Length: 345
Ligand code: SF4
Ligand code: SF4
Image (cartoon, rainbow, N blue to C red; front, top):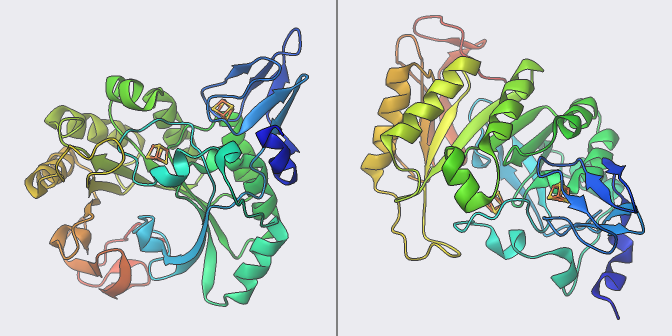
């Protein structure tokens, strides 16, 4: 039996692709834009060319399902204190050797023994059942490669719910446009390094990610940037400065998170990020002019908190990614100096 025969329930025609000559297709879901010959899979191994039709084999394929604080994404300026239903799938379009979710991101649909199908309507019913849930977050592996499934979920949910992507930001502009049209409201985007780092380790082009950050921000999608700082990879002044410079050109109010790496997957030989490396990154970005810079994966560190960019008063106190915190913001303004704070409530 061919492995994909077990996956018929997860099969659907891909939304964004073109037919080229001789049953060859080009996928337009993410910026790899794979050219795929008949009988072959694309780079992410979720999409297969079958006689000139590009089919996905991950529609409704769910690896994980949980309810988490929005701060865990991490999103600090987006409806703080609320919870989101979070779902993930399998596989990825990046090859990061440090991946902290490698058990699902490095598993392709063909390799799954007991796949779980959840229809978009079942997801909606679970959200309705959990009365306190404010929205949905698609996370853990790369959500772009589940585009068709995510769009159907988004289209079922009314506009009271937020619709989030925790993403490497490598979707095509066309994919981003259909997501926005279907109600995408926010993105937590990981920036993993400069051009050479991302090409070397992730097999991708970081300029496409920055283009999407710029475009999403221009379309009023809430964006926060996450940089996992990994010793011997991207723990350099040049990377901190380059990231801050690019962000300044887009919007200095976009929150920037530098998070601590812990050994995982093929990077078990690398030590956890020294805290002073993260503090150096923070200093560099603040001195360059980014208003809201955070450190992550260091529970209890004072730079997890939000301080007013104008008077530096403590506005939101956090403990890790939990939603236990105090707030000193009244009607979106700093209680001390009255400055407008760019946080959605
Ligand atoms: S989603 Fe990206 S990696 Fe996957 S087949 Fe399409 S272009 Fe290739
Ligand atoms: S993009 Fe994220 S999920 Fe994909 S391999 Fe890299 S770290 Fe893992």
